[in-house]
Image (cartoon, rainbow, N blue to C red; front, side, top):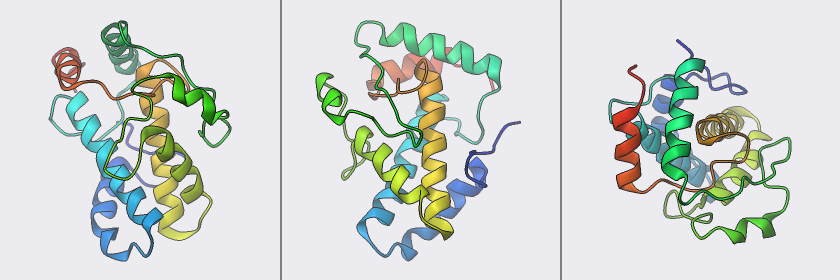
Length: 172
């Protein structure tokens, strides 16, 4: 069972528990937005996993199956992957304006693209903020993998598309 959110030291379960507890410690908007983003991305993964709860990363063979399913579903609306730097941040933010759903909000304050930037900023900090940032980078990397490769997670699936993924998701 792969639960480590590398490069973070947190596992999926630890990160979910800690981010829920850390909300009262958020001292600025970036910290709060990072915690909210983490919750939104894990809720999204809950839906993709069929509502049974995102508590671990899928094994490699199941990731390949789920990635194929997501790519088939996205086939009619997929956008070109965005080139990312070593921190998982889009290299050319002007290129992100080409997709109609690319700037789609994950939560009320952060879009998918802004979330990558926020994750990199937080990852450069110490203490829990750095772990939060690295956990967010891990979630983006995992979603990129499920969407087809680096930079592929550029849009949220519609609710109907999420149901299709959940129905065809590998059994956990």
